[in-house]
Length: 274
Image 1: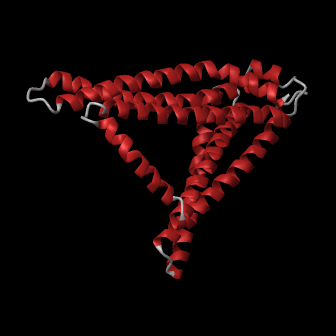
Image 2: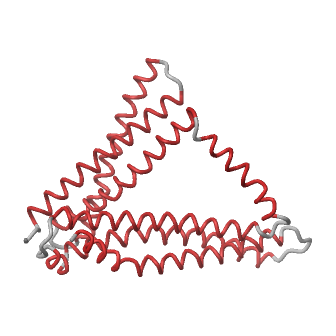
Image 3: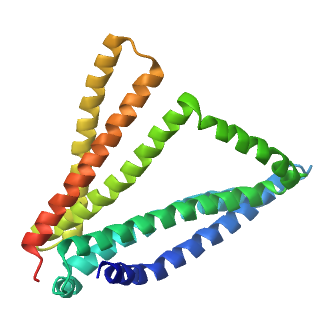
């Protein structure tokens, strides 16, 4: 039943995600062409100021549009969670013969998929924009193919030794940060929808910022304590940075797990009608 719920959620969101992905690609193409024109006109003796200003504004708009579309992808998944769980549609959802975990996890996985799609759209959009923009340079692609193997070799070397351990910790921080962000948004929607009879979305936004303020305060306090302890032990800067990243990852993981079970308890007691 979990697979059916997830499939239903994905079908409800994939159309909008696809539309935003096309907008990202279109913005990347327009911004890349504008950047290509700027690179090309920089080598000319005569330049048109109006065309240059319009190209710069178009390129800036393209960069901003890609970011906005990617943020909208994740927000839409959260909105889908609210609509399918805490509106009239949610009443039907909670009458299905499924467990509360299946209901919540299907939305959680759908939000994660949406975030992956957003990250992919962001990376592809900026890559297309930059490649198209710099293609105006002479021998750009031949030079790129020559440098790329060396860059990949140097990148592989970074994953060995102390640098590799640092990158592993950085990756752990990104993963736990994504999980934490998704759970916190869903938890804020849950608390706001249960506590507020009107203006549930505004209540969810307030709860979200409240949770993040508390987390920021905890992170600051732990950072000061960690800094004092590290200073007394005279550790290196890399050790300090690694300790702070591990501390932040641990906090993200604790909040993600605790937030999920709090959300489960609220939904199971207040809304589950099965």
